[in-house]
Image (cartoon, rainbow, N blue to C red; front, side):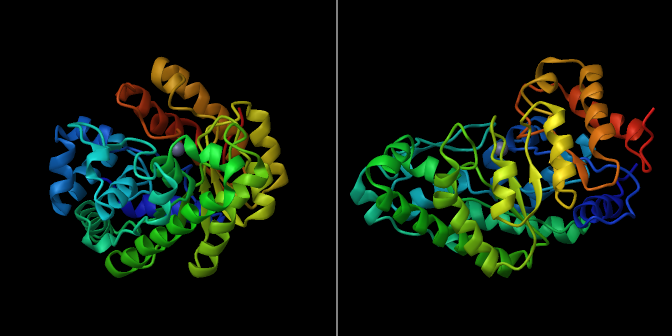
Length: 359
Ligand SMILES: [Zn+2]
């Protein structure tokens, strides 16, 4: 049986745009390098070595998991952006490679001192092999299965990689220095966007990994200062709808959507479904991608029937009226049982056909 990607494209993008012509609730998941290695038996270096091998492995994995979404995990402002900064600043010794997970940066090592920030060079992503191959893989996925690839950008997740725990001290002691770092990261993110335009083409949406928007990390005011204002600037330059991802435990979703015009929010918390029911009532035009399906809970330690219950709860409460995408958040960890992942599309098949039948 070959997967009908055209149906998935319709399901996802029609749901995002609020169309009523959706057959069933879409299933979106984040399969990172760990999952792709696990499904295809390839090492991370093999994946990264050729855009063709990488694109095919990604397609195989997402088809195996029966998702309606597909993306290139390394085309993201986390470890890959740390690697690009490390390369541009002759600090590749801060990066550690593994067989079955993405490279990891020794957090805070690239911008250890004030001088490191002052002298920090912005990477040229067209010269970085991982970025080049990731963008070429995205282009191949576009071409092969006609699934428009969404670009992922971020500020704070890169701050965390480059500056580490010092960033939180900078907020009190030297906010100007921290803003200087954010400014450089913004410039680098726009370089990714320029390369994306050239290689992959215009993205249908921007997916912001907005890790600053979390009560555990900083005040809301600070999250707007160190991430929000830069997202607003991105929005002025990139004229497509933006979606916000935050997989933290106390996200500022209700606060941030008053300040920034997001078309969708994506998270796994709060776990209380009432929060999401209320959110949908207050913001009926904002798509919910989630809502309380956390990859480290029933997905990881429960059974397929626990997962089914959770998915059912999400669908019955949030899918009526549309603008709901079922999504375990965040990236599927190494140890999550495959039957638990496959329980999601099965539960959608059972409960997620429109119109949603509430008992
Ligand atoms: Zn996340």
